[in-house]
Image 1: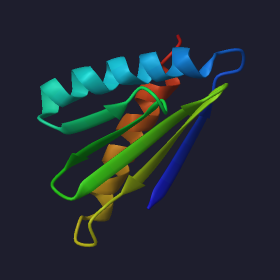
Image 2 (image 1 turned 180 degrees about the horizontal axis):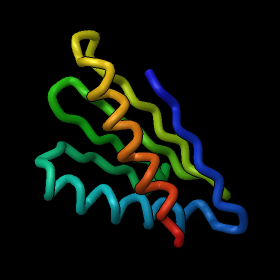
Image 3 (image 1 turned 135 degrees about the horizontal axis):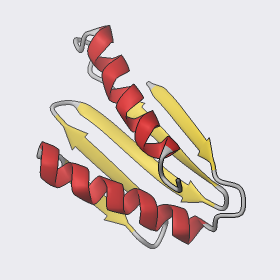
Image 4 (image 1 turned 90 degrees about the vertical axis):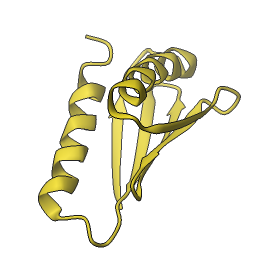
Length: 93
């Protein structure tokens, strides 16, 4: 399990949720991911082949919890995590 936290000072939870949701919508189409979102709690879940990621937008930050299957090689886990971190870093640029 990995936890990624990114802070966006001055950004409201709804702004962060909408930005992350837009990124996830594009990724699901591009990569064939399963995506479930919950606008009421400003959260969402993305999954594919045993990899599961859940995000939660709060005032000024977003938290992403990643769960990987035991048999997934370390380099692949790092690639997934780094890809998510890059997208979060560019969220409001």
